[in-house]
Length: 371
Image (cartoon, rainbow, N blue to C red; front, side, top):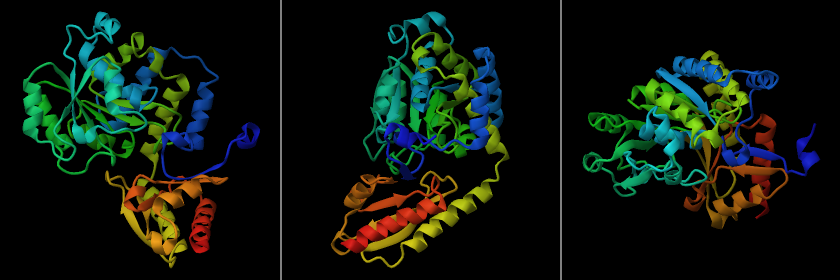
């Protein structure tokens, strides 16, 4: 079935990466098969989530885990869990937080927008986000001062290239400081599934990641952490978490994805990603006004992206205009344009076949040569 033709949709060549606005990842056949099988079965949902918790614990080194609708939902539910614990009356009281500590600290440089502001995900639980420091400077003393003021229920820490990458308090130090006061640390690691065990080892009490990014699963959020907090997160399904619950296909998909990852040869995977980046670089060499280089993943995941830096006067296109023309085509070629205003684009080859790389590079050459 050709869904693009059936519903009048443009085909997308995804040179941007694992992005929600491009409908997540291509689900791997092994994971799709497990999710499809789940849709023909009934389960006791509590038992299914308990099984997911065991798989998540084994995969991440955390005590326990559960599956939510997505990472954004997981942020809201994690914040809620730190306020209510496993008290059902408090769960039912939210988003009214009277009588509960409700201040959530977040470094100002971590106040990202990943489709909506992360502060909004905090406020949805009824909590009050407190930005600490300035965009490019947050000191441990400032975090300590805010915790000592009282009423702090959690610290939210973001592991993402979208954050300001300097002048911040790093996760191990955040955890050490927060734990001195008995305050849990919630880590938004939506695209950091390859670093889950590290983030847990760094001291995080809850780590959130997307099942539908590099794990290549159906849409869902994977939550790993302390058993008492995971129990409190799951209890939110009887309160504000009801609209954010995960279906059986999300839970089974996440379990299958983690099991697939455990058996995956990551060194071979990295070698394949490097090959595709080299193919991009070699295909775009010698274009006037285009400088090529390779950017390692800024969070330390084992892959790189091609960087395309444009000299508008020579190339005839700025990074922004080249990105716009490619995205407007049919098929739409979607490059990674986070830094277009700085004069460069990234070409993420992870979701590209060799044929799609050839098409994308041909279009870039055609557009630059024509100008």
